[in-house]
Length: 359
Image (cartoon, rainbow, N blue to C red):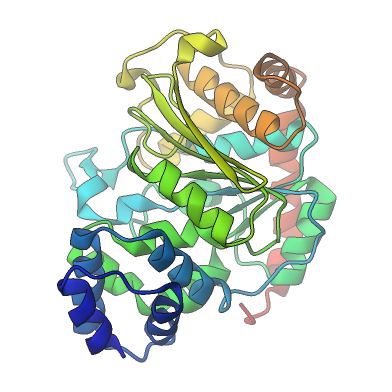
């Protein structure tokens, strides 16, 4: 199957959604050699993945990820640790560690959203970097991530938020993680991980690494049955709403996709240089997040507030961006967001000893 699919893609022909799903089932089940997988995803990258191909790959992946049952009153905040690829890494010290230019904005945003009263699921792939991925930063914050699926469900019910990395990393993605690191370029794997909706959330906020992808991924989400979603790509932040320049946003609602470009000034923020929201390794990024939740003001807080406001508005929990901004700032200034961080630390510390290897 993979050889036929590879030849078709090399010839510039799109695979059907069904053909792609069947091909990627074999990939995620470890039935395809690393050389074939590398050739296939690289050929897709140069042809440019179609909506049907991305949807088919996402269906194959989601079928292999354990589902969390919480009802649909939930926001799915999905990111891929894209910095595993050489295209998106930058040196941050003289000992050859690697890190992203920005701190972990979406991770900080989760605590603000929970502090504002939302139930939030943040999932993604566990970065191979060991220095700066979201999972690494969460562990530096004192959060244990190796929870069973039932415990993640309970965590969301009790704290309003949950992080799910191991179900994807230890499951179907474990077969492709070494390939991603070796070939060192962004591929379809960067797109399909965030498309998985393990909790069946009604509202979704996804980030992508290239502006041209926002509308394409919104159409993919429509194919996958999503009713309401925002897909964003910001200048200087890639997969977040940016305060460093314009942000491309594609909104899916009831089968219709509308795209726009927004600026920080439209929401009452000042455009800043990317250096103003620079991050570092996992320890440094954890300190940045703690400082934001403790009330530090400045561009780093502003970009988190902006992303939280967009999420609140997208999920229908704020009637406007202005209201979303007010609610996000209140969650920080009241101490509620920081309390959510501490609640998550306490919950996961109490459950880590009872981890089941069923992920």
